[in-house]
Amino acid sequence: MKQSIISTVAIAAAISFTACKKDRGTYVVPHVFEQKVKTFFDANAPKYEAFTIDASTGGNLITSKGTKINFPANAFKKSNGQLVTGSVTVQVKDMYQAADMLLANRPTEASGNMLISYGEMTVKANQGADELQLNAPAQVVVPAAPKAGANGQQIREIPMWRGDSAVTYTINGHDHENTSVSLSQTGYVPRGVNWEQNGNFAVNNNNGTSSFNLDSLGVWRNCDALMSDPRPKTTVLGYFSNQWNSATSTSYMGGEPSMLFFKVKQQNTLVKLYNKIVNAPAGKDGLLSYQNSFPIGIEGTFLAITFKDNKIYAEMQDVTVGAPASGKTYYGVTFNLTEVTEAQLLALIQQLNTK
Image (cartoon, rainbow, N blue to C red; front, side):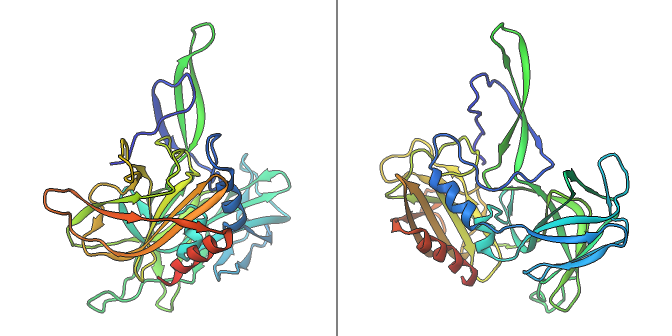
């Protein structure tokens, strides 16, 4: 199960979480974490692409990844409901490969369920200092679609997911005069985004593309199918036999200095194992998956990463997840990390696209 989230604010007592409505970025570095985590991911994460659209007539744009978005006439409005005319700047960040998902901290997993991704994206628009909203949906065509199933039947629809990189939470406590106070704070989910189905579907166009309506700006949209694997499930524990960074905590605020990812073999599924193993003996520090979330027999590639003392350590390991040993409830994988340069780490991450 997911570990509890602990606030670092001194007056914290009870914390409740509700979804935030804006994309807040990628990796965030609390004061005890390695600054190199932030600089590496800031430098290499996918960036927004900017386009200019005439708000009155609408228009089309095509990103460098091949995503097409068609905005109808009068597609934008201000927060007060006023229709927008004139030029509008539209910014798009889209991704289709595992390496981009890792670098953007956007794994394809929802509450322990593995997802097969056919594209993740976020779109925002502004006119000057005004952040705009959609007055009418835009049509999106993404350059990805599911192939025929095992029985040869074409998959027609793919569920759509909404997600945010942050959650807002309320801290209840007392001030310097012992008066009860409630504070609204923003924290970051460790898996990078909290995916939830939004009830919509993308349509498979049977030509290698899928289409859906963009219904909101400033949040993430994901075109994902649940990975249906009937095999029995187990829990995976990833042991960092060396170079574990003890600053990795259970305070899940993003930017952990020790990280562990799993890319399913020949499938666009990237899982982040982020629950910390607590009270670990020597050589058993590390991270574990959701309970009973990995199919026994699933093949894939693990990438273990540690930022420590201004250095980077990593190991990539191809693994077939086995059944638990007799009397055990988990499958363990041990990593022996070696020092790498930033360029070498980036190359390892990009290798996941071909795994």
